[in-house]
Length: 547
Ligand code: GLN
Image (cartoon, rainbow, N blue to C red; front, side, top):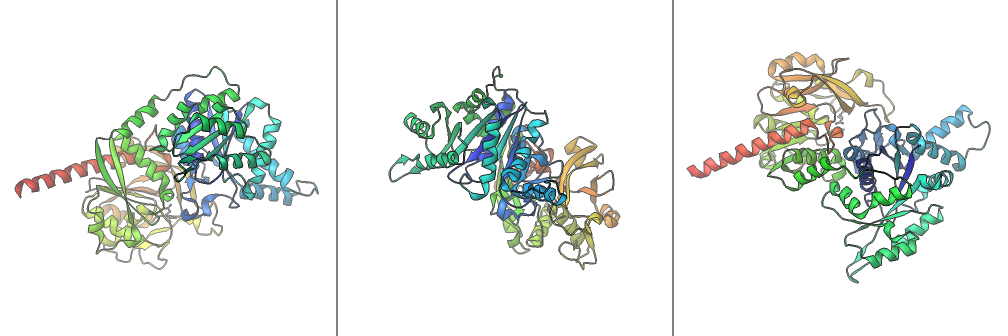
């Protein structure tokens, strides 16, 4: 029988519920428990796949092809175990299930209502992974903030689960904010009292209160929060801002979050935390020996969350290389032939990002050209790979109008074309080529050097593909298709022969990079950037000597 931990949020959004949930999960896992985390989001979209990154940040894709909330990325990066469709549920998905059942006549003429039909479906999904027998503990993060109209049915479902289960099988952790008023030089507990009261009015009383704060909480404040929120002082946990999200598990360990939760769940005889890999990662992260600067070429660069997994994968790969990776945002919409050298000259490598639609693509193509011609380490992901193919077609093969039919349907050289299975797709939600596919890798290629394997599996999210009708011409001119789908021959990896590091992948390697398993392409790309940086310094040094 699994036990359940619910994580709710109060006062404001963006407090980092996902990181607190992932940190608690990490600590419990490090003590030998089998843990998974799921996220329940109160919005009406059936999944975040149809949301644009400005709305909701990156869309994270699981092995089973679910388009999910970016918090699932944190769960995987922290726990090093895959998540699935079951780990992310929205109001839209709940209603869709209930309404479909109603249309099938499954409710036998009854009036279908929020309580009990919607709440029952929420409860069923909240307990699904727990009932699988695969986990000791299921952590459920509730999206949104307590008091939101739309999160009411979720809170009600938690209330009912808490009522139904033995007391020791369910814990509610409430994450809240303790603001500091600089004029009064005081930390304020009132918003927390109000949000706990609101949660209690909805029938759920938190067992543990985690307080985000910019200043340490002294014992008096902890006592005050405990007294007015009706928990014991040891159940008030300070969550000070950390310099990296990866430090949060250690901070929570110091504060005893895992121990108080284990106590409430009556779990005894747990092991001491085994965090040696985690600590060695943090140690490397904190003591870099070198810095490289990577240009992230994309159209959402002003928005941190849009490329979340890519940024995190660089952190993992940097630590692996004992190297700090400085990311410089390069807005592809503002790039053209006249400013490209100026914009990219200080960089040690560029990553051309995934994306949809035509905004900013010419800038991306310009960036690829610069990297190819200047032997600058290049890494293209999904749309970034497609741009590398287009650039090669235009500037090496000489097909000036070459394009993807996503941007130009009428091109005479559709080197990137819509996949056959996509041609009749009308519905936008969940219909891309999604999730894990095998890819076979040719020996003697950069991809093979990187993966040390002939068969890999990576996650996809796209509709267009390399047009294999042109493959021979590309190969003859020096662009190699080093990875292909073994079942249908789709080109998944391209690389250049006469270049120190130039690779484009149709899939999303960033989604599989974790603290304990940094992704090998990111690791090798950072290492190529280190070589580039060092040789640049040597050239500058020599120039200095001769001058
Ligand atoms: N828009 C491109 C496609 O659908 C690339 C998608 C992506 O970068 N994720 O094929």
